[in-house]
Image (tube, rainbow, N blue to C red):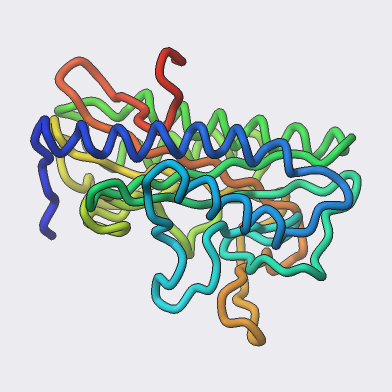
Length: 255
């Protein structure tokens, strides 16, 4: 396993890519509403990324055809945008995307409700976000990677939710996916010890059901819950520092 430690200059470039991504997510949130097609969201996402002087990092990655993964309700990740896939009242919509600035990547996901959603959906989205922050509490230099994973999984399961185990977070930098894998559930081994300069994409994917998933056989990309239960996804790119974790994918001035 080759985990790369970033320099201050490299972190500065990543910080730009990540703050731009935070702005992008706030812009795209306004498009998660009934009557909007998932393709409209994707096209807006690419337009904004390029206006920021960045490049989409999902488009073309291993053949993925879009800039924004738009996943609705029981879709976990990698939903392919389409003009025929129109958001309806009560849907929950996960937007997963990122961008490249001067060779450095950002990655982040948010799940939003379209119009008025059920109490079940609201609670799921809230707990998923809380899972991220529970993991973040362990993302300190000197801690072990498994502590992040364990905290995420324990929080979800203590509230009766399923944890997707077939998909994980990851390191990030000059590549979208770097070592190490960041699991969302307890591990038998302690994993590596966190060091300042590491950058991780921590991304709980939490379901109202078992957490088991299947891949769409037609498009080869879309991952759905096996039991058709709702799924929520919340992800940030995080920097490990001597003082504690820094969420890079946030707007400047926000906590």
